[in-house]
Length: 179
Image 1 (cartoon, rainbow, N blue to C red):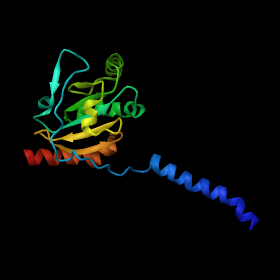
Image 2 (cartoon, one colour):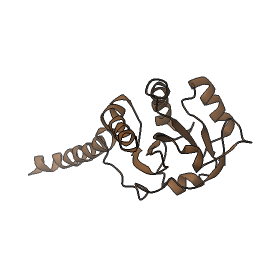
Image 3 (cartoon, rainbow, N blue to C red):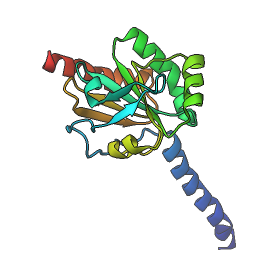
Image 4 (spheres, rainbow, N blue to C red):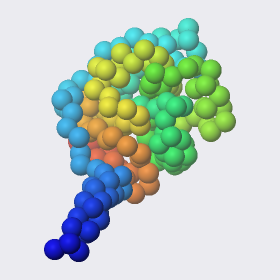
């Protein structure tokens, strides 16, 4: 009986380590979004590169696109960014950025040094657009149809595997349907 008591802390540790491993490394469940099949929220905000240029929801219309919420303070965004550059260059999908709760100078430096995959990046300095989108944190990516309706939300890094298995088929399906 005494030997069994010695293993109780080890068993508790193993259970906690298992939950930690699952939370960090296992495929995340899809987080529900109240905005799926609803219009992208209305906004009127400046772009990161040109604060005198104001963009609105209407500037996202016309093609199936991705809207990527990012920030320079986000380590996962740095991991994701090179693939977004590749995606914009090679796949012909317009990507719009939402620079979330960030400093313009840092964002400009980021886009210059790491390259800019975005048609434009919206400066969401106070996070109001993020609140309207229901952003949990960065990165988050929204698939938006030609009419500005949100069709899918992904929380986390977009990489080659996720693009090939999930986003690309959805993009192709929307383009066929809206043909």
